[in-house]
Length: 196
Image 1 (tube, one colour):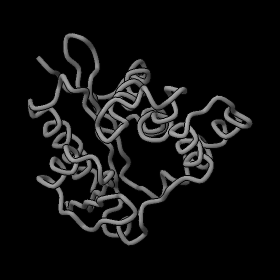
Image 2 (spheres, one colour):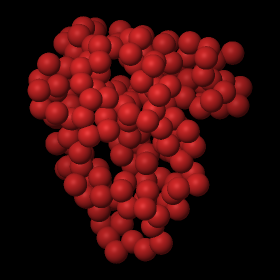
Image 3 (cartoon, one colour):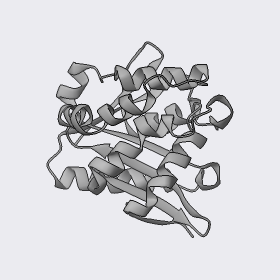
Image 4 (cartoon, one colour):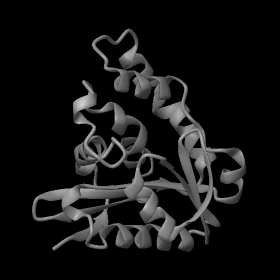
């Protein structure tokens, strides 16, 4: 039995773990990272810390094994990251050694964060990230999490949601393509949008 519920502060370690174990185009990225938190610092943890009301998790008998995180206002969230999230991480990793190439790419994204294309943010101001461990896949858990997030965004008056998926993440692209409109492909990212 899989239960969906709002995020709780005690779920933060699970966000980090799931993000790492799905961080290689949906597959486990543990073998390419010496620092197991770097992926989560970017794609999951800041949402749980800064906007926990916009995070939902999927939990089974073994624990939290999936999540959807996001923000209703991408530009405002980027400002909050710059003020309240990135500075401490930049200090923490200053002069870091023993990083793999994958670690370094994530650290580069912390030092100089990527931004969603401005035209997409204007049309679809919210964005999300969602990941499920393999044991939850194929059971419509992703669809249920997405529906939950979309419903609360719609209730809050959000006009649209966007997301970017890595071009190598074939399973993710197939899922998003059933639920969102594919907008374009650039620099190895497939961009999707959903009007609300």
